[in-house]
Image 1 (cartoon, one colour):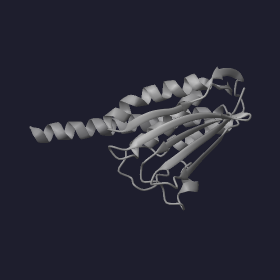
Image 2 (cartoon, helix red, strand yellow):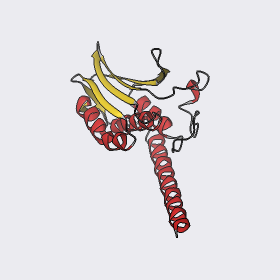
Image 3 (cartoon, helix red, strand yellow):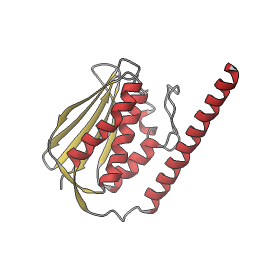
Image 4 (cartoon, rainbow, N blue to C red):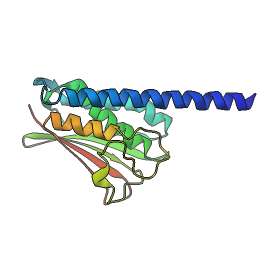
Length: 188
């Protein structure tokens, strides 16, 4: 009986992975098809970041990750708030999934002259320096591969950043293991 339960659980996991892949492929195709047609609506970037962190709390709790909002300056941006939320959700999802239980993910929104910078900093394993430039490639997954995922989240995030005239970069932490995803968005 236990074998049947294990097989059913594995089958359900496979269905979930397949559905996630299809959803991400559709999202990628939609963003590519609408390239250059970004509405210039003004939205509250700080509220967007706060909502994304709140949504990620369940995933962080399930992985025993300490998720914190370190700083949240007031900032408005132009673009599509739902798309920006997808980008931030992807950054948070990656940080949480690649950080070991008991680790930490911190988020900051810092206003600088003319821009807002969102940093998602984790205590995960970091990435081999040679792999960093490839992380935005479709289906590319740097080691370790133990985490589930499609290899499309960062490619989608990069498309959204480009559509918002924002700069998205990834770098290894210098003070310890981990990665810092930085998104620099022009202020409205």
